Image (tube, rainbow, N blue to C red):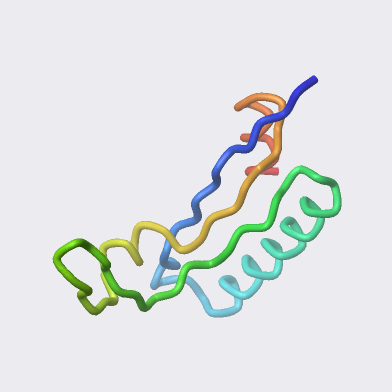
Length: 93
């Protein structure tokens, strides 16, 4: 059976009311999931996004950061799956 790559985009911000310990626990669980997914071949490397940046266009370069993008996406990863349902299972174990 063939596989496809599915793009997984993570949110850019944590719930401000969350306890610091709960946030750290979620981060730790993420890295366990991520490392296991890489080892199992169901994930390809992705990256967190920087909170700084510049917008490049034909009109020039504008300094960042750009709050709207930061709030929308915090990082990206690729899921390798047989179909969309399978990708959903990998994304939300």
